[in-house]
Amino acid sequence: MFVELLLIPISVSLDAFAVSLSKGLSVRRVLPIHALKTALWFGGLQALFPLLGFYAASVFSQYVTSASHWIIFGLLTLVGANMIREALSQNADAREENVQFDWRHMLPLAVACSIDAFAIGVSFTFMKVNIILSVAIIGIVTGLFSVAGLHLGHVCGARWQQPAQIAGGAILIAIGIKVVLEDFGIITF
Image 1 (cartoon, helix red, strand yellow):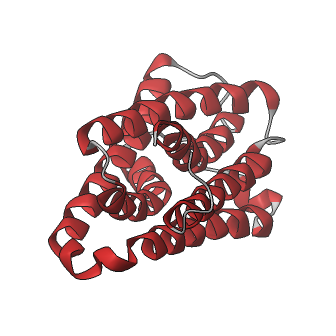
Image 2: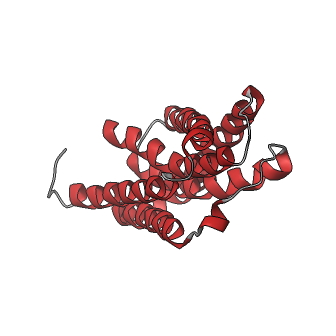
């Protein structure tokens, strides 16, 4: 379970990393306030959405416990496949982002990157994780990845945006498969 608690935050933060990377491409200088706003918007919403998903699923968990491994598998596979599909369907023009960092520009980006985290929160209900620790790790990792993406985008360009999204999606799908295989007793780690 420890490995999943490290891989899931990294995986869900890769969308925010990719968006931050493209934001970094479009600024002449990355100011400390840009980095702070990026970390707070992306990290904050990435922490909030799994918490909301966790509590929504907690209300209904007694009705779906017997199928929990399939729910985890389905949600993680859906999120992962969507990340990969989005990465493969983007063109260079779609990757360019507005350079502004006010709430009107950051809120929609942060929400779009965090919707997947809601599904992760639902799966946390069945994984029996410490939700406070999990969302804290997700928020911190996403904040750090977002700042790194902002700086990396500014320095290196958009070369790694698509591979990062694809890797994040593949990791989520692999975790979903692992949960099903563990439930069937095929693997035990």
